[in-house]
Image (cartoon, rainbow, N blue to C red; front, side):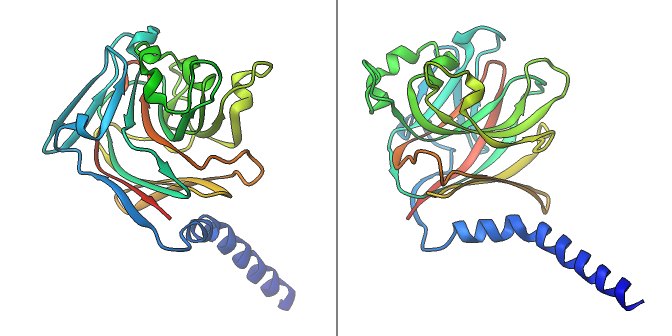
Length: 260
């Protein structure tokens, strides 16, 4: 009987440790003082703080937030869209915003780009604004081949329409001898992180020298995703971006960037 009780106690401790692992990791990422360096409630003219890649995209402000829509034509690269902060941010970052999905798509992805610069090869200089004309048609390859950036896919579906969804992190640029798959940072959170259309989720993404994390909260429930980047080439400065692949749309509000 005593042995059984000991086993039960050990199981409880192990389960408790697993349940609290994400919380502990997030608290570790929050050590030190965060300073608010960017705030947009997203109700006023978006073009004062952001610039847009994609001639078929649209951004509209209202009292509800910033409605960002990619073009409606699937499989047409001209209908992708990326919204960039005009300013760059350095060091550790915490990014917070409210996200409401407004499309009903079952394909394609949204992406949060963290600290993007050009890779410095040829025309792709560090300041990505200087070559924005090359991204008027914002094909994915122009980003994963020419940007130095961390990428988090969210509200993301596969391209087959079978309901497969995920949350993933990547590190660009893709090397010439690599496939796009090699940009992925393990683990891939498959069939996790589903965003329902019309519901508002509070997002918190954190990047430090050791960890990259993404948390979604809605109606008192949260899901947390984390990647170890301590052995990956670091990024210290760059712009924040939001990508919608063709057909995807969402409303953003209360967008904040903290540094330390």
